[in-house]
Amino acid sequence: MNDDFHEIEQLAGALLRKLGSGERRKLLRRMAREIQKSQSARIARQQEPDGARYLARKEKKPPAPGTYAVKFLYPRGAPEPRLVFMKSWVHEGGLLTGFDIEAGGIRSFFWDKVDRWLPITPEEQNKGAGKFRRKGRIRQTAMFRKLRAARNLRADATDQEAWIGFTGRAAEIARVHQDGLRDKPAAKAKPVRYAKRTLLGLTDAERTKALDLLVDFVASA
Image 1: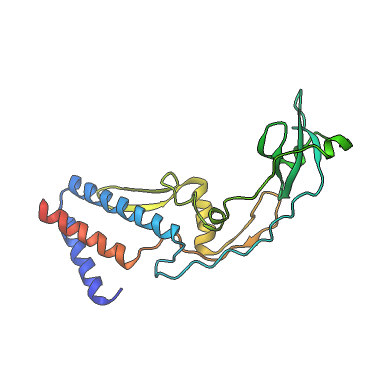
Image 2: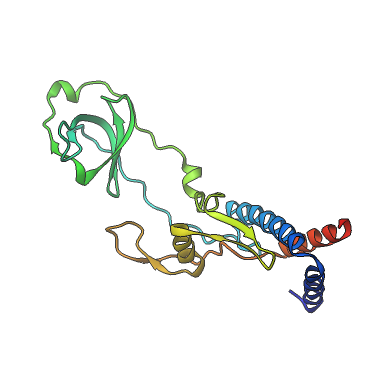
């Protein structure tokens, strides 16, 4: 921000102080929610506050599909574990995902919760089955889909301040990316350093929008 804009912000602060407590709370809440929507939209576009693109996620080699049928009882410890039979599947992380013939659709199972692996008969090996095809490539490349949702990216105000931020576990995850910290990508994985990607940060357009809201509010009061 240049010095001229700084002076305008100081003037805006003076106008805010002249409003009554209830009016300030109403205006600041409106500002917070407008900026919340704008921040969420920017994150969806994968952009930094200055308009630069987020650093791209490292490309992962897709897991090779299983070339043989698998049959097992699941889950471990259940009184009556159910039979699972899959011919089209992938092993990714701690999950085994594929077309579950018994269920008639795509299912995922925790590899370490398999109760017992069962032998495959020749007849079963030749049995027809649905195919597991990986979908949602575009959705997988868009980062922070859940973080930017309204239930995680919150906004509110008092008569003294407006705020936009993350709460609970979402706040911990957001801080790792905001500051480029180290964290475990999965419970049993080794810590890795994440690239710094700014989730929260005012843009020039958002500052201007906040001032416009203030001027309009004061003019109509």
